[in-house]
Image 1: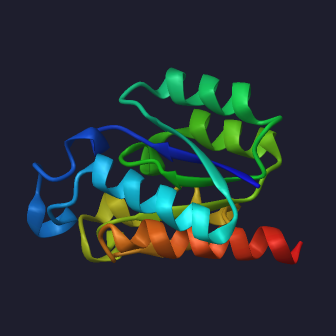
Image 2: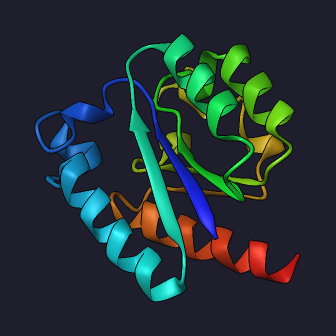
Image 3: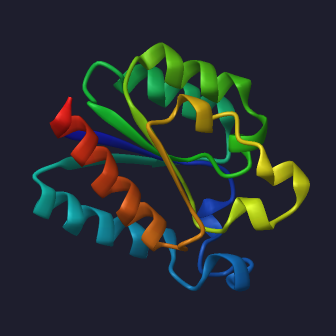
Length: 145
């Protein structure tokens, strides 16, 4: 089972930025933990982080045929990117949306996600553990369907 892990803009700054919201784990730390967990769950991961919307869309399109599902932290694009949403819909693969901070306890504009209604689940507010919950949920969903 192959899972695509997509990280949007500014997530390359994890561990440095707004530690009160996101904690001290870096994206490299999160990726190591996810790789270990994926191994335990019998899954493999391919990953991208980009600050460029078009690059994320092209990555989804080029990997759709090989992945079984998506684990997505779209960062700011979760709230703004119709293009990212459309690429994920077109892939016809299930996705779980994750956010490290509780988007519902933040600014009003962050409380709306363009990905939530096309996701099989949304995990928000558990810092780096959001990814682990999301991966477990996605793998469970894929095994059940």
